[in-house]
Length: 100
Picture 1 (cartoon, helix red, strand yellow):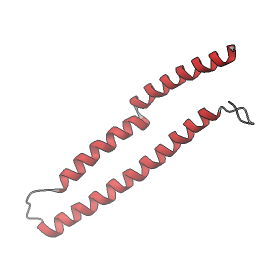
Picture 2: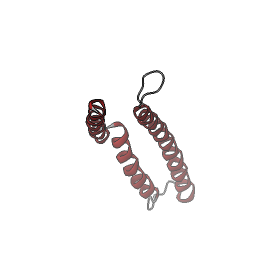
Picture 3: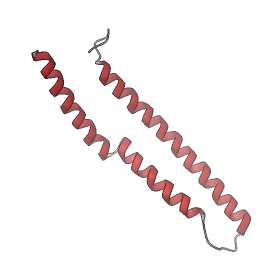
């Protein structure tokens, strides 16, 4: 199904979702940086520079791995494979619809 300017509606929805996911990812990175910076400041205010167990590392590491995985999906290899599969399926269905 195409709209008035000839752009496939499903393809347009997919493009909108992709752009939204990229914007959401940027917001998540800003949250990651600000929250973890606050945790590190709290750590240094409570322990001083004398050392001790650096407990913010847990939040930094776990949240960082989650963001890295999401970033690879949105911007990296995982996404390209999915997009290729979607394009193949899209072409298959479009060809099938055109022949009918």
